[in-house]
Image (cartoon, rainbow, N blue to C red):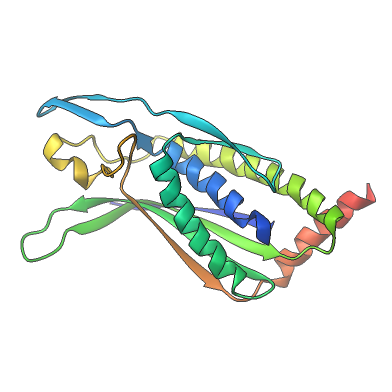
Length: 218
């Protein structure tokens, strides 16, 4: 099986990190989740509905749609909070990446553990910049909102392609494909990981500042 890999990149100031990551991760998981499976007998099941909720950002001019599962939201927020702390502790400027990997399990014979086979990986590269004043922050608030809108459209376009998805499992195999631990939604099995580096490429920082200065000049 070939694992699909998609890369998104955003440039934000420190206070925007968590909202930008939540917007993108929630968007992906919204399209990679189903309602809970209700099995009547082996091979026969119904699927519950997936509720949605709008989330308004405080530091970005942006509203995103997420699955209305508080359990799922807590899991994602915990991972994003750890990533943000790592970025903030890396210095005044920093860069890193957070990855959302979808996988399925392949049962192995005792005493070996199950094999986890990735089938799709989303990597979000994050560049953090410092801004000089409130006027620059306001422009950044608008520009990051515009960029997030573009990224969300990109995510939806990619997900709507006719690409591989794990086949719907039987009741005995559902835990090999879906995370069944949540009471109100059933995402495909996934894990979130991140990496931090301690320096920001000057080209990225310069590009963001040029964008802000160009806007100020209008």
